[in-house]
Image (tube, rainbow, N blue to C red; front, side, top):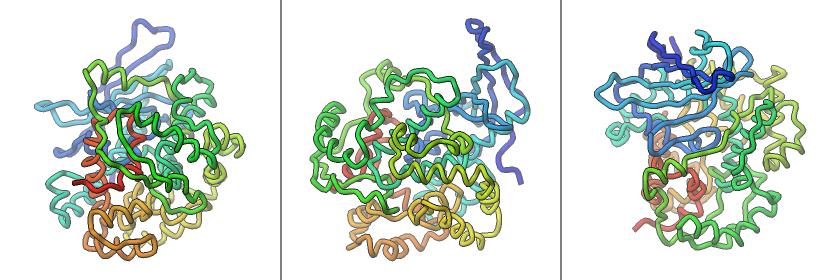
Length: 443
């Protein structure tokens, strides 16, 4: 069974006449997609799409980012994904930009499309899962919800799931961005990223929250949002594996208006971004000093976990291809996969559930304080962190084996009721999507 749909045979190649010395070229690849496929819904469906090096353009409705080429992932191309409007033939257009002398080989094309397919869950396996979910969830069927965005590689997903744990979402975004900028430095193609300091926390993790309490008012005012801070802002347990998008809880009085640009030109200018590297590979991270990574990228305790994960992959102790192979086997292997993931140092129950979701297993809900808030507000449950597992089973068990998808559709709906359509939000406002701004009820 093919993991993704093969591209159409015709491709287009162009060369930038103003940049012949660098041999800047573009290839246009076409990928067949289901008739009901919606690029905007498929991309803007999880916080992973907001994390570097992904870049969603809210005006053109396109996704762009770098991708690696085989055989050793040392070469990188930049891809832009778009869906031509009707009445054109329903296919995904994959524009590939590269600065190198050689043309794209068949192996390159296959690798690019495989990575795109993984991000957007365009495969026979995911199509079956989506149909199965729609059979038990009528509202999801009517909305076409079911494809949850993920990364082009399992390793990137695993690291990002670690970054999502036990910190504010602003810091999650910062750490992911810092890793991509580090990759650009390591590759020897570093171009100064002028906005890096705006996203990278310049205080140690332990003092980060205290400082943000003082400065948060300025940040919020600058973004034209009005929030009320709460003293619980200063307490986060960074040694546990229990927080989803890793945010302290605060009070919110008004829904922020964050997704409106005054003109198309404003929208274009807001979406401009300096050159950024790709997400680093296991090979690039395995040899790094933990303390260097902690300081350079602000990863805190996560640096050790990430380096050890990379090392286990490089030396062959952890075979990602074998883990991914289990996804296409019998459902009974789900427990086997869960056990294998939980044996990886630094991966707890919450991170494991998120990784399983990224691998196409939707049975487990990554329960945390955000889940508790949601069940209290939406389902009127007297839920606590001690009862949350029992409560989610009671509410979402009817959708098995798609409990996560049912839960996540509610969470995403809640975000959009409060913040507006997330596909129209400018990236500078992603930091506002936090549990701290979700505590007030929607009237």
